[in-house]
Length: 562
Image (cartoon, rainbow, N blue to C red; front, top):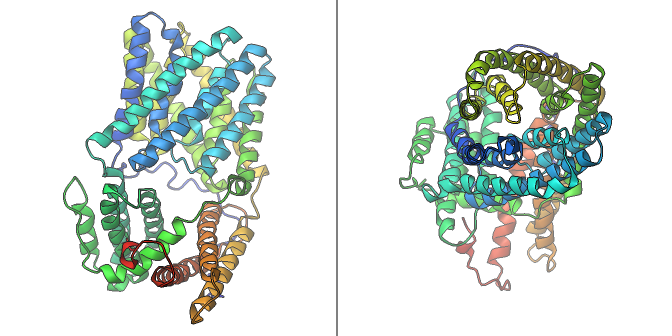
């Protein structure tokens, strides 16, 4: 067991502060990619419908087109799979919504089904680590479909439109691979190097070193997840292995910041921009140990879906309860579109209550500002349907371009776009739309946040402690076997697999528990030490297994090295 003790943390009860909630950040390095992709995915279907005079069907094509917003940080092989699952998930949610809408017009039933869909979508997106925009787009699509007049005979045609647009969105998302096939993995590696350089610049003791270290480990973990989703053999493996060595250097800098050269790390990161040669670290032997350990950990079989869903139960319950109550409250107030309140609540829920509070403030500010922007744009959009479509496209671009600076800024564009989309089927009185949207925003944010307060996640700290203990025990077992000159056949391999699985579970558990508002302080130092010692033990175990003379794998020891 590690001798490290948990570092004293802050009080379990944290204040819900407004400081920094609306502060603008630096834009994402690839802010233009999702912005351009959304326009490229939405424009052709909408313009075709406009040409055929069936703009009223745009809701169904936009359901598929908005899938192009996902997976922009993933390597293209992984992106293809993720986008395919997103499209299938979208179609599943729309199918349930349309069937329900065709069978009943009872608003209470529709809100209940929408809340259940939102909870399922939240849990599956988080368990699958789909990434932004997460469940919000899927919930927006399925909730809107619930309140669209529908008959059973219309459903196949509407689903076909959504599927066709989803296939087009998949093609749009994959198109950049033709120009820069290694872009995502190079970018993830550069981000890890830059984050490590920022921590190394503090020498491990300067101002902001704790937050810089946390950001560095997060960036390195993201880089490993990106690289190890690539093929281990073939043409792409050469690029992968060269980038892996750079990520190892970032890890070394995080472990020994006083000995690292921040400028060298930044120079390596800068060299990864564009399509030039990947820089070499010149220390392949030293890098190999960590590469073996980390690759063995991340290549381990992932936990079953039910185990990944278990820790997300409080968030799913928050989502379902909050969305249902928000929709019911909207109905009680006589609002004609309760799904706006439902979607507002669904957009709030983050990993913990503190982040949920911040998102609630951002959502309210952004939506109310967006309502004012709609008042300015509506007169122009009402001049002609083509202007209505073009305004929606411009707002779509603006939303994705601005949302990485702060969520509220993106919402300023999302809100008027959503209001204009409701007019694809016919003119709507601007005053009524603005009033309903403002009221639903306030109702959804208030009721949704109260639901998050009621449903707490106090067991998150206990799960981290259990995961650390399991990882330490697995490491000790592997270390004892490594100390034996001739361990029993298969024993070391089994111990290695057990340790890899324990470390994977530890990282997933720590990520899920980090920042929970009400609960015990997390043992961050124990988590870091358990991961570092586990990586070293894994490296030695993998090397021992690869070097065994009786191991008939057909692969030389140097071939298993990254």
